[in-house]
Length: 137
Image (cartoon, rainbow, N blue to C red; front, top):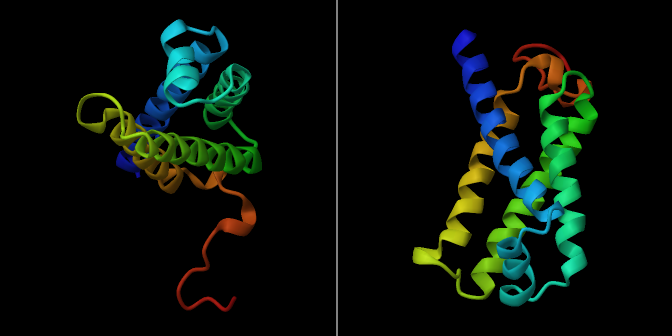
């Protein structure tokens, strides 16, 4: 059980770091981040701020104790953000060396799925716990 806990916290902290730091850069309107969204991907500038705020809040939500339903929504939002980022970058040819902007979000999404799958019972919404074998539903 200790190994599962270590794996959970490792993946969760990494996801929170990547999502939270990226969100903070978007909220702060770091020029390279804004350029990537506006000039390269063609999104409006206000979209950078909206996504940034939600990313910071999502990173906080997966780290704080309790609130399992909020965590489920945060994990879903992070997954949608990362897969959307990969799709957006793939649609323009995955700019960067070897499609880095397509591969990186998918790798972080993989970490996020691992974090979600490894979460302890206290962070699982009650209705989402699978039934045990041999136990009537």
